Image (cartoon, rainbow, N blue to C red; front, side):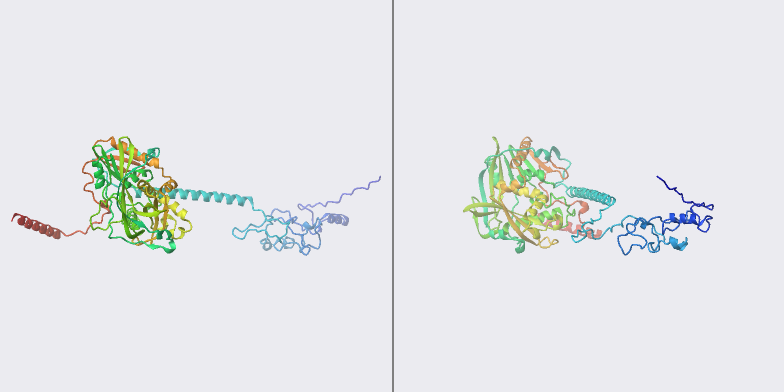
Length: 590
């Protein structure tokens, strides 16, 4: 087998620099020049290898050769030299290296070839699936770096929200404690603290009491008007005012019936339903309250002060939203308590049929002859605490109704809405459609008040407790109100809904009674701490609280000082007073 000789092409030598020499400088034969030219790729411009000049591109792999109209005439899609075609047809407008000859003006238009996809717009329509689109073409996948940044941003946003809510709750909690920091009674330095009982011990107590015995039923009740069961926010009723009817808030020791029962030795412990409810629901309370305890012989009397916090109704006591601290503000705790007491008195009388009353064993023990009194009945009941100890309490009922041809007793109470911004629930919009959500919000904001109403209904053995929803006509008008709805519950069922345990209630009362029976004769004060969940028992002087004011006085820095009078006017008034006193003394001597 004869093998032809392999000829190696001539390689021209360039003595002036790197790279092949120019055709004019090649000092070789024509055959060698043709061989060198045959080895060169077509349409490839020569790029200088000098360090001072820029390098041109060798191949453009980013060009789209799928379009036949844009395909260069010198190559084809299958032509391997197509990517090396740098003719005038294929060269980009900004790339003039083939014809610029290193012109600085042309170099300014130089741009780098980037194979990355263009960045996605941050805000704009995202890819949506189009069934008519090319099925073989999938949506462009998001960059992993962008996804990681988005995840980090979401984590940072969640962390900031968590810190903001935590700080917000702490601020409200501090403001809440500061608003309720004042004690219901001024603790005097001569008072001697005997006991300090935390609420945590109350939750562990339990005592089963036997069914009580009815001793007496006094007063008169009007029948309940069933029309108010059909009231809705769309056909609201204006709350009327009953200025001529008298309401009595008599303490235990001033009750003539209880004094008579004490003389007859019917029991050893005496109280009212309001005082017992405050003790039974003490762990739920936030505001400060106080009870006066008198030990007389072997008898124990639980009393309240005149103008005590127990005569008012707390509003938003268990809420986390702070109330204004200024006492003269219409949305302060004190102003709302007075407004709630006023609403409850009028509400309990408006829901009645005023045609007649049903009377009982005795008349109202606190009313005078010819005096118009509110519809109320006092039920004196006796519970057995142990073999030698009985408790008698005066319980109140507001109305009576005929249910299934049987006489049923009712208690009437009203929740009041003062500003939807504080509760977050607008009763006029939610009462019809989301009644459960409204009641749940009230249980959160007024848990102690609802628990005390339920305890009073259980003590009085009421068959039904009616709870009304009363709102202001306008959030800034605290004089005019409307009734939006009235709901009825059985006390035992409602106690189960709000997690009110009867045995625990009586366990708290039994423990307080046992503790007080160990004390010597005298007067004591049980005060709920304004800032801590605990109660304290103080030994007070016998004349304490006898000359107390009906309204607790404001501190000196909050009192409005009267205008100062000049010295001459003050001296003249003192002189006139002295002259008047002298004249009275002369008349007495004559």
